[in-house]
Length: 163
Length: 147
Image 1: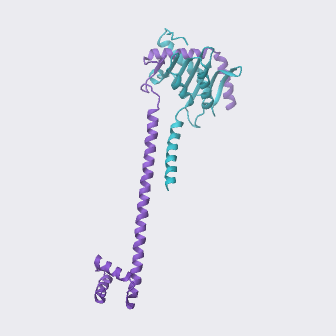
Image 2: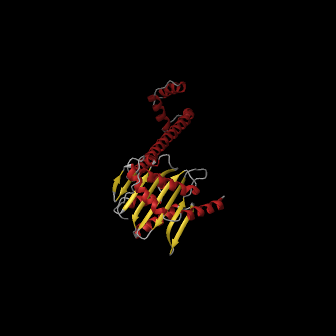
């Protein structure tokens, strides 16, 4: 009887942990871990900035000085999160991903798409997460609209700390 | 015990008018070995009711045990729920109000919408330094395969 109680207790606990684990993508952990350190720029955009000008509902990006541990963390996270999804574009050099655009797996009838974009440059890494109700063929258009939105808001491009 | 008294108590017992003490006296008498032969029938009757009382006691006990076990399980489930909610609350990412955009630059937070937009622009330009036409055409190829 005692053992049964412990088994049930453990089962409830594991169920709760399972619920918690499903909430987050792996790249979310990358944003959390590296987004607030020196030499990094972490941005999260919500509707207050995005407005109705784009179909992008959420935008999150990290631009960071290139470091081996960060690169490894990003590549591992991308590998986990894109499982079951689509590699839209991927370029490699010497076996290493130089850039990639990925559409994550989604539920069958869902109209919400999630994308991960990544760029591996000699001195910096760029990781972007997008969510919106547009299919992959509209991705470039939405990114252009977003760029144009910011250019229009303020023509002066602020030069941030060198990354 | 006096035979007359037994007869009186028995008559009252069968009529349903006996008190608890009188019933207890009768039970004690019939549990003993000195029961008169003509009263053997009543001895069997009291022996049966004794066994029924024991069964009822056991049933009450197991119901109590079941209730106690249920309380343990309910407490365990509640503890796990509290633990899960606590984990979710304390390990959530620290960020400002979720409805507002923000930027962290070198660890410092900015919430001015224009500034945040400019920070985002830099990241978008980084990504855009490839040939967009190649990217668009590759996406079209993939979509045509999927259709």
